[in-house]
Structures are given as structure tokens and as C-alpha cells.
Amino acid sequence: MNQLILGDCLEVLKTLASDSVDLIYLDPPFFSNRNYEVIWGDKGEIRSFEDRWSGGVDHYIAWLKERVEEMHRVLKPTGSIFLHCDWHANAYIRVFILDKVFGHENFGNEITWIRSNPKSHGSKHFPNCKDTIFRYSKSNKFLFNKTFMTHDDSYVDKAYKYIDESDGRRYRLLPLLNPNNDRPNLTYEFLGITRVWRWTKERMQQAYEDGLVVQLKSGAVPQYKLYLEDSKGKTITDNWSDIQQIASKEKIGYPTQKPEALLDRIIQCASNENDIILDPFNGGGTTVAVANRLNRQWIGIDSSVSAIKVTEYRLDAQHGNALKGQTSLHSFSDLFKPFTVQLHKYDYDTLRYKDAFEFEKFIVQQIGGITNNKQRNDLGLDGKTKDGVPIQVKRSDNIGRNVIDNFQSACKRFDNALFERNQSESKSIGVVIAFSFGKGATQEVARLKNQENIIIQLLKVEDIIPIAKKPTLSVAFNDCGLDAKQCREIEFIATGQSEAGIEFYAWDWSYENQQFNFAIVNDKIGKQTQKFKAGTHCIAVKVVDNDGLESIEVITLKINGGVALLPLN
Ligand SMILES: C[S@@+](CC[C@H](N)C(=O)[O-])C[C@H]1O[C@@H](n2cnc3c(N)ncnc32)[C@H](O)[C@@H]1O
Image: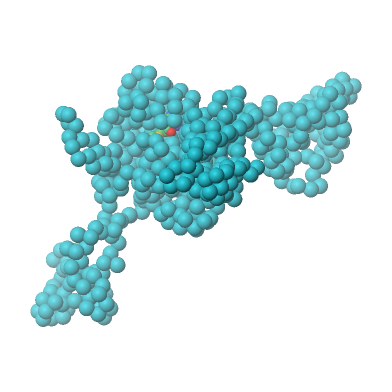
């Protein structure tokens, strides 16, 4: 399952299996100036920022190295890593991290990405316009798909200067002579010319019959005709100057967001469809958005709630756009790929009203149990512990005495021998899990223990996973009047409340089909002004708190030719 995970990548990486990932791209926070560094400004990011900065470059390198070591462990033997950095620390990163962790022999490339084209000098230096991306592999058995780009027009005009008279196709002529003169089996006469050729006589004859070998005039050495459309394109070197800064339609609004085209190239080169791509410093989710579009599986990790939520909205919008047939670069072959968002806390309401079977399975897994995949004739049992002790999960509050009595008989019927053994050894005969238990249930559990030595363990969901209530949200609006174009300007004021603290607000000015397609994200204040033409408009606001939990408010406004403003709900 594709996953977005909130947390320090060091801790999250430790939970991933060894040799399980095909490609890692990381764009860690650079060792650069402080203000530029803090993108999201939320708790998780600030903590990580302080961690990295406390002891200068040595500290930064030690901080990153620990994480790269874990990345090396989770990478498959055929996998590759692309580490994106800049002049501040690239020399240190190559020598002290990548050569040490991956081995000098597994160095692949030092790619230079020309990210801007400054027009003027700095006060006393050449303008800095590039980043470095190091490519290393875990072994010499790594995947590398050769990639090409389209030729530029001036090159086409020069190199493919011939035009087929019959159909107007462009082509170029390439030599057919073999640079190695000592090949008697390739030495023969063709079109009156005897030379050492690249191809066997049969292949040459076939190409000639296919119209791909031409002799410009009698007595001239035949040449190979390569049509522009048959050329794979321009070889991509380690100097990437053709990828521009992000296009405005991709922009999420922070300075270090990378262009999708950059990730497109990396992912196409070092992975195949269905491979697993990992970005441990996910940011605004460029890697996972591209991996998703290219039909790869993916995992994105970030220590910032804002980064995770922004990525979630970006992927939702990508899905929405795909459904509307408006994909940005390629078409989706599979229109909807579900993903999970793993935060530090679970929202009570979402869990409480989740599909019962899904909820039971999830909870059994959280306590390390084995799930019961039968949905019927299961005695009401949802799984068992590693020792075979039955587990029942109730997706409700205030569980009563009858549940305990029924559970006790079900445990007996499930495995009477185990029941009796555990009873005689004063061990638990079963576990009941619920949001809360009523007095009747706790009294019955106590009675069974005291009178019959039957031990039933009661566990609350909040003892297993951290639960929180999602933020509350209210939205007010003011009519600011008409502008010159007869558009009505409305000021919106969103007020969220949460014990964890509010992280940001996000806005969608044309919400439809329950598909949140944000126009503004990471708004820390919750105040926006927007202009509307006359008509009915559906506006959605989301508030996200420091745990990453969110609420949405949808307002439908009828704006009447510049006269009235009516909320419809
Ligand atoms: C340079 S940005 C990545 C930008 C990303 N490549 C994109 O195109 O959107 C670095 C990200 O690393 C995150 N980060 C910083 N320390 C982290 C840590 N210890 N674990 C996980 N993420 C971390 C920051 O919150 C930030 O979002």
C-alpha cells in the first residue's frame, strides 16, 4: 500500500524491512542559511532543524549519515539512491557519507542540475546556478534504464539535414564502415565498394532492401539512413540543463519544491513499473506524486505535519484531475491508487465510524495479533494473540456485561483445552478491546477472576493507539463590495480550535464532488479574500492541527449580480 508517514525518517526507516525498496530519492534539508531552511515552520520540522544545526557541518554530516545508513539497509541489492544537495555540503556528503556507506566502487554519477540561469554576477562571485545529485547503487547489479531527451531544433536542422522526397521525413546519414580493419568475415563488396563493414552481408542486404542504405552517387561509400523518428533522442549526460524550475501550475508555495520533470527522469531511469520508491524527506511530495503517476508504489516520510498534509492534498488533487482527464505530464493507466496517511494520532471519529471489519483487523494487527479473516461463523472472535488466545474487538463505547459473558463462552467453544489450561495456570483466556467499558463489564471481569479464576483482559483502543479529537472549525465571511469588473469580493475568516494547536488552513474556491482541490494551502492565519462572479459557488476550507487531524467546512454562496450574498447551507 502506498504510504505517507509522519515522523523522523530515522525512526520510520528502522521499521521498514531490509532489502525492500527499489529506489530512494532524498532531498534533505540543505546545510544552508537558516531562514531558507525552515519551510513549514511546524513543530516537527523545527525540532529536526535544531537537531541538525546545533554543531555545524560535522554535526550535519553525522545527522545525515545515520539516516543514509538506514536507507542503505532498506534498499534492495539491485536498488539505487539519488541524493540531492548543493555546494554547502556536497563534498562532505560524497566523501564522508556516500563513499563510506555505499562504497566508492558503487558511485554512479555526480549529476549537475542547472536549476536557474542568473543574468548577473554576485558582488564578488560567479552566480550559483546548480545543485548536485549523487547517484550510487547498492551493488553492481543495479537497474539502469537508458534515458534520452528530444533533440533541440537547431540540432535537428544541422544533423538531420536530409529530407525524404517521397514523404518529407527528416534523416541523417551515418557511417557503415567498421573502425576495426581486421575483420575478414565483415570484409566484402557492397554496391561496388569493398570495405570492412559494421554489419554482415545479409544484414546489409536487408537494410538496403528496406531503403535504409543509400549511396549518394555511384562509387560513393554507402551510408546508413537514420530517420529522426527512429532516433532514440539525445543522450542524457550528467549535466542536466534542460529541466527548468517548477512550472507555476505545479507550485505549492515553498522555495525548495523540486520540479516533477526532475523526478520523472530519475524514476524512469532507476525503476520499473510497480517498483517501490522511497522519499525519506518527502517535503511537498514531488517524488511520490510522480511515482504515483508513473505506476510505481511509493513511501513518503516527513517530520512535518504540514508536509504530509500538503502531499495528501496534492495526491487527492492528482487523483481528482486524473478522473477529470486532466493529467499533467502523462496519462494514468490506473486512475485511482489508494494510499494511507500515518500520523502520530488517530482521529476518534474516523476510527469509530470506520468499516467494522477493517477496524477489527487494524486493531488486532496493532497489538501484534493474528487476524481472523472469516467474517461469518467466527464465534464473534476477530483474531488471536501469538499464543493463540482469542481477541474480540468492539467498535463501540460503554461495553456491557453481556459482551463479556458471550465472549467467555465463545473462547470455550473456540479451544476448550487452551481455555482450561490458561484457567488452571491463571493466564488470560481472552482479550476484549473497545473504546470504553461500562461498570457491568468491569464488574463481571472481576467476578470471573475472583470466583472462577477466569482472566479476561480488557483493553481500551486508546491503550493501544494514541487517539485525539479532530479540530473544530467555523467560517465567517464579510462582503467587501464590488470591484470594477462587477466581481464581488468576499473576506473569509476561518477559526479552528484544537488542543494540539492549529497548523494551517487550506482553501478550495470551487469544491465539487467531495474532491478537495486546494487553491491555497499552508495558510497559517485562516484569512483569505477572494473575488467571485455572480452565480453559485461552493467553497471548502480545511483546518489541520499539529497532530495532522483535520476538519472541513463547506459553504455554498449565491452571489446575485452584485446585489445579494446568500449562504445556501
Ligand atoms: C528540501 S525539503 C524536500 C522537498 C521535496 N523534495 C519536494 O520537492 O517537495 C526537505 C524536507 O525534509 C523534511 N525533514 C527535515 N528533517 C526531517 C527528518 N528528520 N525526517 C523526515 N523529514 C525531515 C522537512 O520537513 C522538509 O519537508
